[in-house]
Length: 310
Image (tube, rainbow, N blue to C red; front, side, top):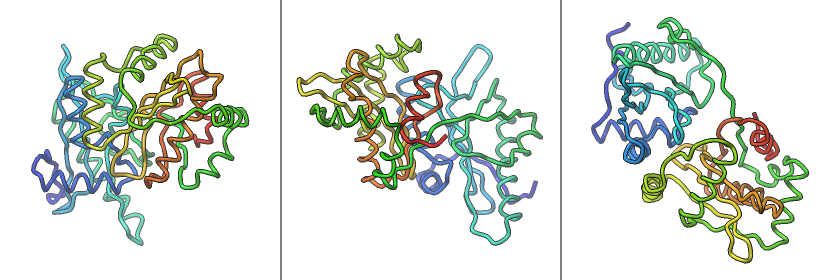
């Protein structure tokens, strides 16, 4: 490998500022990659994080933010609840020579693969936010690759997105609007957590975090401008649905936790909440919302009915 390609941990302020700028500009970038986000996650869920940067000369060409968790077999890196993506972030090059750009990307990935091997992790599983088409550098290091899917809602034209929604979703949305359902931004944590736990029991998944660590996590993100917590509230004051959305420097926002009262689904509050958050995100300049995963059964079906692309 050429001597001008180096990999190092990023910890100085100027290095992390360059990393944040890369996260903001790269298609792979998201709040999940930010030191501030990973610090909040480690404080609430344990583990440690490190940001590795790959430089071609003086230029930061790519890198990866790793959340490491200790096990009896050693440190592991893998996605977990509240950390859906943990893959490489790569610089895009404005060049008329696609072979040159592809070569730079391949060398960045090869440098990352070598560094991950050197760190001696017991297990490493990465999930990329966009398609990294050429993974030969990783395969050469003994990695395996498989596809993963999610739904992404385009937000540039909210009216067009509403027109793409399934007819039943639009009917529920209209019912909620006519029934006086309203959106509450920065809603209280406890109603959200109660719905999150109830949804977990119904869908057979564990709460992402215990109550108080989850509260600290959300409050930390709110203080750093990295999330919004929204409620759909009925005229009588009941919270019918709640949603936690990740923000960040890139054009993509992420819905990471959404829950609804099953007894109130007929009010259309869940569809209303999704729609109003889409509108708010679009107004704030976000180009898309990643609904996070496809999900089994009716969960994935509902996401597909929101006008999102697979």
